[in-house]
Image 1 (tube, one colour):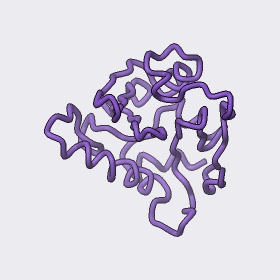
Image 2 (tube, one colour):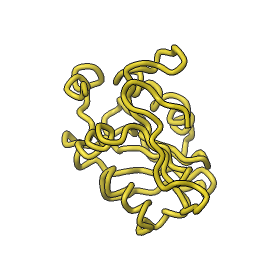
Image 3 (tube, one colour):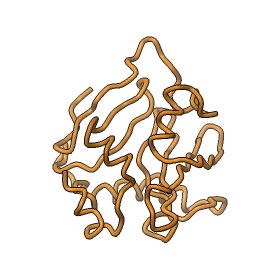
Length: 167
C-alpha cells in the first residue's frame, strides 16, 4: 500500500497501528456501530475524496469543521499543529480523532466527541488500544461507542484501499 506517500501528500505519517490495521482489515464496522475510515485509491461515487488528500479533506471538513466553529471546542482541526484528524464515527454521530500533537504519530492520543452526551473524551492511548478497549469493553465509553449486539457480527469488512464494498 502507498503509505510512504502520505508525508509528501498531506504532511504526516499515519500511526503504525492504524496502517497495519488498514493493510490487514481495510475499512470495518464493529458491532454494527463503529466505522473505521480509510484512504481509498478510487471513489465509490466518482467524488474527489481519494488518496491521502481526499482522506484528510473528508475527515477535516463536515463534522470537524462544524465542531471547530463552536466557541467551546477545546481543539483545533488538522492541518493546524496539534489539530484533530478524524478516523471514524459511529451510528450515533459520535466522532473519533487523532490529536496530531507532536512528531511521533504513534504517540497521538485519541479524542472522542460524544454528540449525545455533548462531551469530549481524551483517551491516552493509540488507535489499536482504543479499538481493543471498545471491543473488550474496558474503555469507559465502550457501550456508547459500539455496544455488543448479538444481532450484529462483531466485525464486518467494508472494503479495502480499492474501494468500499457494500455491506
